[in-house]
Image 1 (tube, chains in turn green, red):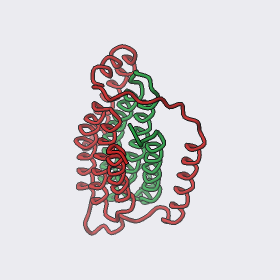
Image 2: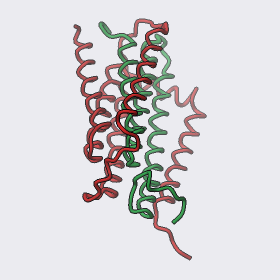
Image 3: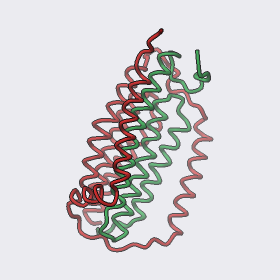
Image 4: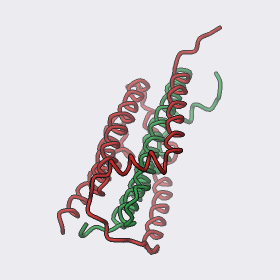
Length: 104
Length: 166
């Protein structure tokens, strides 16, 4: 791939990671925090695939790991959103600063 | 500038622009739709990196599954009168400082490190190789992953169903 190097993809994934971290830190909405986590996981995936491509071997380790990350992200999203909906049912809000008790 | 580099910068623009929308948008609904742009951009980035199967998986699982789930959760919990939904836990300035320092540090490390890079081979279909890897070298993680998914499925149902009293 002419004109592109590994550093291009590392910097892109760094930007995505930074924006995801920013989202996680600044949001009070629990769903917004989950979206930030998705951004962070995606940046990790870009790194995996870029390293797999530029490492020069013909194995598929990097892509396999990226698939595992996607799979865990799906599980995390299902559980996380179920918990968020449960919190909403008992607290009528998903503001993470208002939900500071474990039971009603 | 080669065509590949031009495509990369275009995709990076779309991805980072949508990620900015996710991070900065005041409305959580706009954030969810901006997330779609980011996920599509990352999927296209996978294809650009020669990982065609992974790009399709990203489309199916993220855009077709996780994003729709997120949108459902937003719609189910979003109240129009709820103005606090965009409130911030940490002010934007401290958060920007924290994130800026982290990003600068990561880029500095990435520039200083010596990467062992080889010229990438020309893109070839990856589906056969990935399937082979899953059923030979990675068969144990693969089976554990299916158990994790089953547990997550059951757990999500148990957590989100209505509580039955008595």
